[in-house]
Length: 512
Image (cartoon, rainbow, N blue to C red; front, side, top):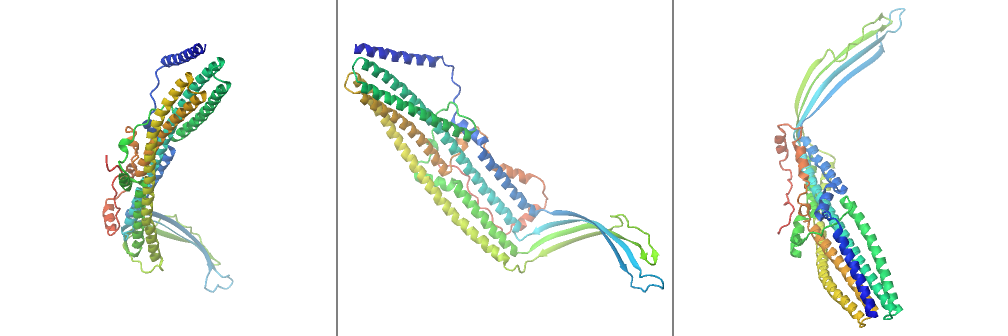
């Protein structure tokens, strides 16, 4: 009797599996799965945080143009019209029978002039302002690169989270189906008296726990999908497995340190910030040097006068003329040399202030370096731990699968209790979930190592994506008008003794 009941259960299970297989065969071909490269390409082009940082860098590019404008001439046009009305008593003695005479009159002057000033030498002030702006732009580019790496890490984490939670749901759905089949089998065995009601209740309790765990996993998947949409810009569909990162990782911790020393946006940004503040020291010192400029003015000026008469004497009658008539022509040109003599200690104070700011920025380089090396160490240790955990979880899944199959078979011949089977099944499900989580953690930790060393680049995941070039906007600005043919000569003269920017190698892995 019991054998016949078990045969019925087996037949029902086989029919259920066959129905699922037929349904899968009848499904239309699945659309192309979305890859991590697709997600990174979309986020790289549309992420608002990244777009805002690029706009901020383009605004920063304008500071170089504003500084270089000091090399070029400036011109101003000034036009004036002045009218003066007056009356006064005369000083002469009035004639008998006449009152004191009062003179009423108006005068009007008008003119316009064009003035042009061309700096020849500013003591290096303009040159250092250009250097300050260029160093600040280089620091801004590193800020942008740091934002790009943060965005890429967010995309990778969100992608891996969705993939992990999708697999969680799949495992728990399979676990629920397995437990429901186990529940049917337990009820059938209870009906023929092979097991007790307690065994059935244990199975039912395990089914309820599995269903609760499944609903929790579905909620977590919904949250991960929402995070993915906020970072990437669209909801995830079917996601392909993550591409391997082994070829991009440093081989040793020492190599990771070398990569970080060269590539880290934080270290490079601190370096350029220090160079900018060093140029500000030179800018403050330029206030102690003489300046030389050419000035030229060309204009017209003239005026009219009309008397309305002298009260008490004779009636006047003439009016003012039309403005901007009866002009005299005037042209002046001069070379102006300005030598600072005494500023009340203001210039010396500014030099000391700039020097201390530069000292703080120089110390900031070491601060950034130590922080980056700490981050690299933590990311590397996390990656190595995740990789070791992954290997252990793979072995655990193999062992748990063997244990569950053995316990189920032994239960059918009476060598194991229902509780033993449920425990083995729960261990297997937990091991499978742990393995999925370990794969997720190992991949995210690998991305963290690349981010910490400054070698997480969009081109490695999405080679067909147009990579944003932060240099192109500045080059376009410098090609635009206005310009003058003598500006390079003025710039060369002003740059004598001015600091230059210390170049750094372009970021990229040192090794393969």
